[in-house]
Image 1: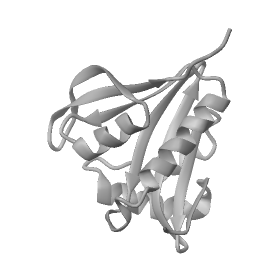
Image 2: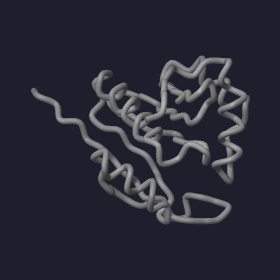
Image 3: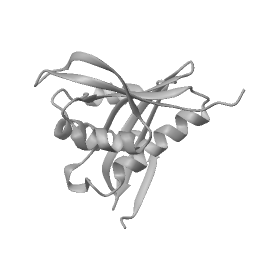
Length: 151
């Protein structure tokens, strides 16, 4: 079992998160874009820390009763160790605690490991965005987890 800490993203994490973006995505967010989210009242970004190192991160936006995952990334050195699951749980707990009706995300249609993770966490396929991704061009599945609310 790894020694994992999930924390709110802070200025001190930005360089590592920007590096992680460049490693994991064909169209990464810039350092400046990530920095701007620190002052965004609708943004909630969390980092996974292992051995003092940023091993992964997730960003979500909460607007009205909706929550959308902007990105989730785990460094290749730390994959398949439960970090993605821990980050997604933190995002879902945050969304649920804020009273949102659901949490939703897009995922490359070919990303079977991510799809399996999302399904294991209660996300279901709700739609398709044609040609959503670039480098390479690919469709995105829209996956959503709906929170049950008692009236």
